[in-house]
Length: 454
Ligand code: PLP
Image (cartoon, rainbow, N blue to C red; front, top):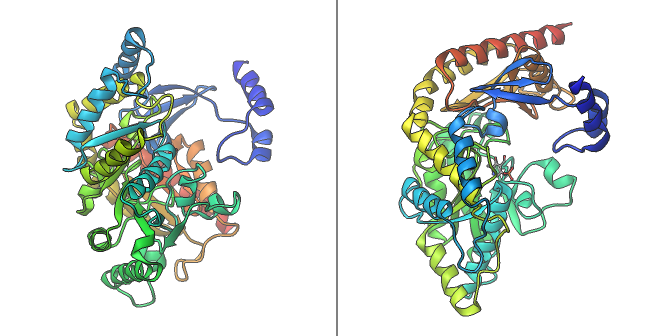
């Protein structure tokens, strides 16, 4: 069958991202062949509801004809042009204008890349270029957090704060300090309140800046809600506190909204949800619903003008990609954003959020679950072997992987991140879809609990 020959070819010739290669040789791929709304179908015809929107990214579902048509129309008119040396194309111009209008006040300019990793890599270079322009080249260091995910290029992977991304590749390679992960349930001290936990993290931030020297620290980067580190929502007051300290020491604040942006949290952007205004914001994923690769770096005038002043001296900002501002990607993004607005999909996410979060919280009492956490249409269940001590299962991640496997058998795609099972469905889902997602997840958890008892 077609399925068998694809299976054999994949095992013979591919190496997959974030995959155990030897295990893959044994079990082979799950080949998806078709999408329909919030559902995808594999090469055997089995249906799944996509509980993670692909990789946290498909806002409009997996079969949107308007995105196909927007891509085809642009392919016919001008399939490619670049944006080096003053060149431009209409979709890229209109998208920059649209993003300047949608994003918080002050973020007036866009620089386009193909991926979130490239965008964060570009942020690092922009900030360094800016500080060179301002005559302070020693202001280079980045502050990030443990369990942050900012991508996997050599530099953005250095900002990421997950052990495997560092240990296995000899990173970080740029100057970066990883602060405590703002996860109250895991990292709160014995008897500490949430407010005290926030205060402790803010003290750590300020003491780190003072100890290392504000003149050496360029920027703080963070995801308002951490995604790929395990869906970690910040403690009360954390973000306004971080913003205040960054402003005090002239440290740029970068909001990585690659997952959070465009309605995921029930607000348009994560920084709006948590009440701060960044100097730089990075968006991707739901920008095009990932039908085409695209990311954008939005920046305020302070950043832009410092870069522009330096280019006046040096000639150019010597950075960019062959496909920066790709017209087809930008045309798809414009259509995708138009759909989000016309169908009020960000509003749909906000309206479904109470049901989604209620269903998630109901699973907090499940025997395998240590913490249920989330906001808007994103959620995580952190599994524990012992609810009292919060001890994880051994080997690490094994129980969450088992739950995800059972969920897949039951027709739900979700993802395990270490011991957390993550959900992040398309913004276009219905109330009924939410019920189906949680029914299948509950069944998977029960099956795993039965296995654990035996
Ligand atoms: N930043 C965040 C917050 C992400 O979640 C991701 C990807 O999951 C990235 C950056 C990297 O994006 P990409 O995979 O497009 O390189």
